[in-house]
Image 1: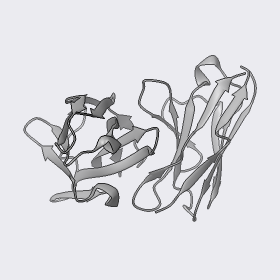
Image 2 (image 1 turned 30 degrees about the vertical axis):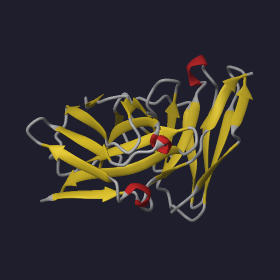
Image 3 (image 1 turned 60 degrees about the vertical axis):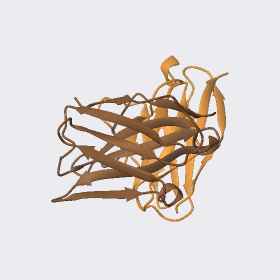
Image 4 (image 1 turned 180 degrees about the horizontal axis):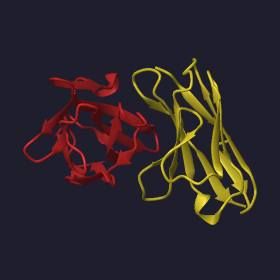
Amino acid sequence: EIVLTQSPATLSLSPGERATLSCRASQSVSSYLAWYQQKPGQAPRLLIYDASKRATGIPARFSGSGSGTDFTLTISSLEPEDFAAYYCQQRSNWPRTFGPGTKVDIK
Amino acid sequence: QVQLQQSGPGLVKPSQTLSLTCAISGDSVSSNSAAWNWIRQSPSRGLEWLGRTYYRSKWKNDYAVSVKSRISINPDTSKNQFSLQLSSVTPEDTAVYYCARDDDQGMNYFDYWGQGTLVTVSA
């Protein structure tokens, strides 16, 4: 099973600041990595797939990069609605696995 | 627009069977490209994929090793829905359960999710 680790666990930032979230895989997942956003009481929402492609309707301030074992989600300028938890997920191998998440909260 | 609507009890007794249903609109459970998944989330285990059902000339299932002996995911074509059954539950199965779609001809990730059902295992 591929283990995903995310850092930091919590990121405290102010609106307008840049957020950089990291996801590392225990073995190569090529570019088969997605990022999800989850707000309290809601299901996860797909933001980025195949490491760098934005899902339908996702604002351009969200971008993804990386391949192999190291990936980054960047939010260029935080909007109030971006304060949430973010999870990475791989589809390179079965079972599909998720990272433990990074919570972006308001500083 | 695909929508997934979950239903089922929020409280299950230990050793009993957890049963949830996910009704699909905007797509078909018999789609030749979609797969219909159950995923759960708990503070101790995070997001955990449990299994899926899908149709590729015949019905197929894949299950996580951690629950393989206790899980069954079945389609209901007459109602365009699919279900989860998890037997012999313990308090460790307490979690929010989600149904979700992934599509081979789409993004191939979990692009549509149900609203989630908190299931508590307690006497």
